[in-house]
Length: 274
Ligand code: PGA
Image (cartoon, rainbow, N blue to C red):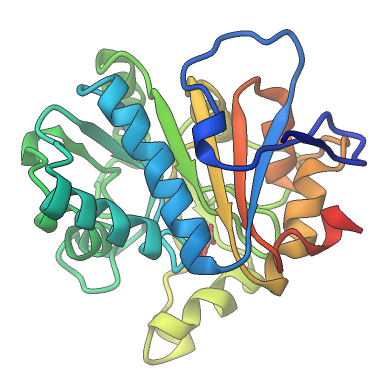
């Protein structure tokens, strides 16, 4: 059964990912769909099954990929599906959302390293189909241009997968009075540096800058899903679905897109259910 949410945004609660059709274009309204799961594990499996359905429908799919704690369960389920069910990544291309500035791809806190350990080395993706913004590019402006052109050359991103920061950031697009549309260098906010410090030995080790796709790069994707889990995400989730659009909550810009689905656990969904 499809439930209507009491939100200003035209949210649509779906029972499961099977209800969603992939690749529907232009339903005529901006509608954020959302699927609420009872646990992080359930949310992760549902998101993975959504991605797998998209991959099966288009074996040479172009994916936009996130890092962070939230997508780890989804990646684990995708790896399981590859190993046990033969989910085939041989034609898949990927573009990761962002990378820390100053970290080489083999640094154990780089996002490239994260992706290698959580997904790439466990599935049959071709190394030449993996795309990353370089955190150590000497000319970051040229690097951003190269990345945007590579996305276009690949035919655009079919399915962008996002997490969301406690402060509402998507990728590393931090809350601000203005946001850059395309890939760019960004200074991380104190709240993001603190949130990410858990992965580093010392707070001082957390990079202060990142290179990230812009909100325009994200919104040009044909289909977008966002995963959020835990009480500390409930405000960011609410702010992203409230019906108001503001660059101070970058996730709220997703309301301008026609094909967005939020995969939430009950804690992250707590405020939208109020
Ligand atoms: P998290 O990060 O999944 O580790 O909470 C999400 C993000 O900052 O985008």
